[in-house]
Image (tube, rainbow, N blue to C red; front, side):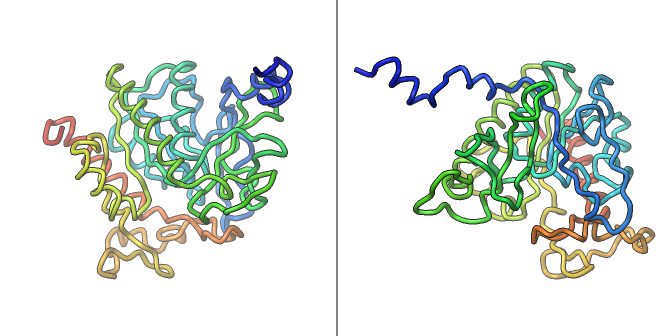
Amino acid sequence: MISNEESLELWGGNIHDFEKFLVKDIRLGNDRRTEEDIVEINYKKNNLGYRSQPFENKAKTLFLGDSFTKGDGLHDGQRYVDFLSEKLGTDFASLAQGGDSMAGQIIKCFYYFKNFGHPEQIVALFPMHRFTYPYVKDKMENPKLGQNQGQYFNTPFDNENYVLSADLWLRAPEKYSKVPHTPQDVIPKQIAFFYDRVMLEMLEQYCESNNIDFFWSVWLEQYQNDIYGKIEKAYPGYHKNYCWLDANLWRREGDLDLIPGNDKVVCHQEFSEDILFNIAADRMKNNGRGAHNGFHRHIHMADEFYNHIMNRRNGIIK
C-alpha cells in the first residue's frame, strides 16, 4: 500500500503547487517582435495584450485564430477580420494570438464567455498540429526557437506561471528524451489533434445551446486537400459549421500568389502596387517560416466567410 509520503512524491512533492495550473487569467506575454517588419505596423492592443478593442465593449463578433487572424505584418483595415466585420456591419473583438493552438484559443474563448458574456457570432480560422500545455520548469519547456510561443499568463498578477504552445509538425517524437523535455520530443501530433477536436466539439455544443452562430475553418492547405474528406466520409456532417476556403489552397511563389494549376491570381489589381498586397511586412523572420500572407488573401478569405455566413442565414446551407 502506498503511504501518504510516497503518494505526494508521485504527485510531484507538493500537491498544493497544482493550483498554479488553473486558468484564472488569459493575459498575454509579449508575442510580437516588431523588428521583423520592413515597414512600421501599429499593433494596438487592449489591456490584456490582444490586438482587439477592449473585451468589456461586448462586441457582436468574436474572432479566434493565430497570427494570421491577428494580422501579423498587416495594418488595421488590411486583415480579414476587418474586411469581414465591415461586410457584416458589426463590431468585433479578437482573441487571436500568434503561435496559439485550436485548444488554446477555445480555452480563452470560454474564459471570455465567463467574464465578458456571449457574442452573437464566432468566426475562427484555426491552425493544426499545435499543442498547448502549462510550462513546467525543468520538466516540460519549449525549445529555444519558439521559447515563448503562444505564451499567456494563467494567474492574475503573476508572471511566473504561464501556458505555452508548441508546433508538433516540426519533427517526429524522439525515441529517447531527457528532462527538460520539449513537446516535440515526446508528444505526437495525433495527441494535439485529439484534444483539439474534443475542445472543438465542446465549443460547438455550447454555441448551439446558447444561440451563438459559430463558423470555423483551418488555414492548413493539407487539411482541405486530405483530412477534411476522410473525416467527412467517416462521419458525414462533421463539418456542419466548417467554411470551405478556396484561398486556403493558394500557394505563394516569390511575390506571386498561385492557385492550383499554378495560375497566377489576377484580381484586385487596384491594390497591387501596395507593398503588403501579396506579402505581409514581417519579412525579417529568423524562424525559417517566412513572412505571412499579404492582404490580398485576406480579402478573399473575408469574401468566402461572408458568403458562407449569408448562405447559412438564408437557409441555402444548413
